[in-house]
Length: 323
Image (tube, rainbow, N blue to C red; front, side, top):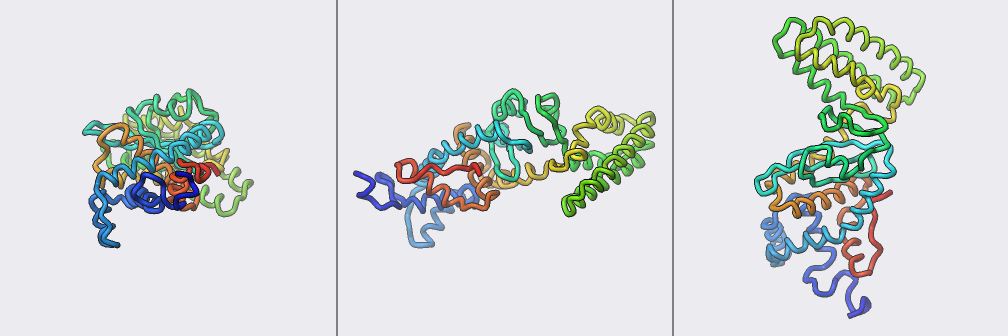
């Protein structure tokens, strides 16, 4: 059968229209609706009866259709992005803890199904070295990875100093509050810069701010207890990573973008309970990549799935996630 002999919305050998398959892909991977509830919804809408097996096959078919787009995005991310935010979250696979990683910036969101929480996953996605700026929390996997520069998440640092307030110790409260105030000052001035883009004012403040940090480190380093001492040593030894944004305000001082990107995945994990195999975990990572990237680019997820399905039979060009 040639392409002229069938409707552009149907693919030979498939029971469901391309639009419906794309919608089901959206429903399961963004709407988080389990297969059984998808069955009920379709019946309620038009007494459409579809077996769970067909729904599973449809999800796999959609994932297979988008795979070339994922591979293209992966290469693009590795070679051309000046700043990437990275984070990870646990993901159960047959009761075993695996890890879902996210690599993102305002233009894309790439999920990676990782077998470990080690640096091997960073290397698998970004290569043995990354020539841009890596934004992350202070998890030790990121420390020592070969990059041009790093920006550690100040929001995480703030949480550490906030916890310090609750720990017993002669100077914990005064040290914790001093650095909380300094971090809050940093966030305020960064927000002001975002609104005004006043480079001179920002850099003048940044120079004075660095002096304040140095003064407080000198003041408290000799009297800090164990927990406070660890935080102060990190500020001293990794100063270029905690305060990179002072010299380069195009890089934000936090890793909120990566954390927000993971929320969709965390919701899906709670609904589904995880994955039954690493292969399905990888499928989920790819589908979530399309969902979050399209949303970030203000594009229709359903249209992307539909175009990818049509591309598998040569009736459309393969859609791209690269803008």
